[in-house]
Image 1 (tube, helix red, strand yellow):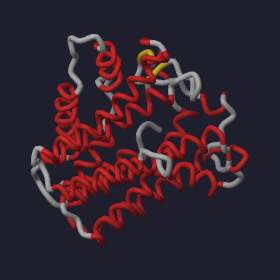
Image 2 (image 1 turned 135 degrees about the vertical axis):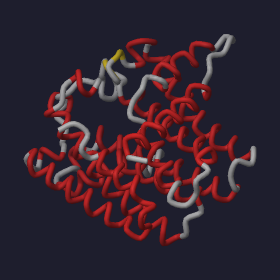
Image 3 (image 1 turned 60 degrees about the vertical axis):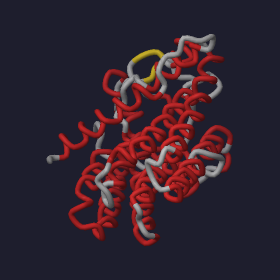
Image 4 (image 1 turned 45 degrees about the vertical axis):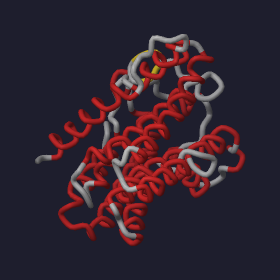
Length: 296
């Protein structure tokens, strides 16, 4: 199967699962389901769940076992986007080509929708483990990685540094640290959780994590480039916000051309780390290249 067919199949499977995961309810809190689904089902590339499925496929072929965990990653990612768009954060009016959650439902509902998706993510993973879809130990190990990556030593910690720690970002290495938390941690846990669910040993998990660390940084560099070179029509969100908000980015320290060169080097180094898996790593390697060359 060629890569395009493979990734489209994975995205379709994720979409089908997500569409039934947070269905509308006929109860007094029905608004929360509407707000959650508004963002969760608004499209997107579904990169994090596909990364988890690709890592899982290095070891096993029964995708249905990993699918709840993959979709949990998308719920966490979507919650973070809802909160990132809030006026107290990045104050963005558009996401994926339409109004941000808070512009559609109001700030209070958007905050609660994000909270709901975060909780739904762990409800989904735990339910899969309880129902016997996967081994308890593997499921708990994967969920621990996911929880850690989205918390204060991961995505939330990175957001704090991004918002409040600019005086502490005085070098490219400082910036890379922030990116490793804000963006890289959840990408890393996606592939690590997939590998753990598949039964990877410690050496294999270490290789996967090193791959993800490099891809996570390359992915964020690409984001910084797109904020300068992209358009609302192509990206589905406003561009130029980093400069408008006086944010330190990779382009604070290097040119667009140099940033692209470094992203390419990181991607090459990452894919080489997967050589230990042989031909089984084909889709994961192609996915890495897809992630870091999204729309130059």
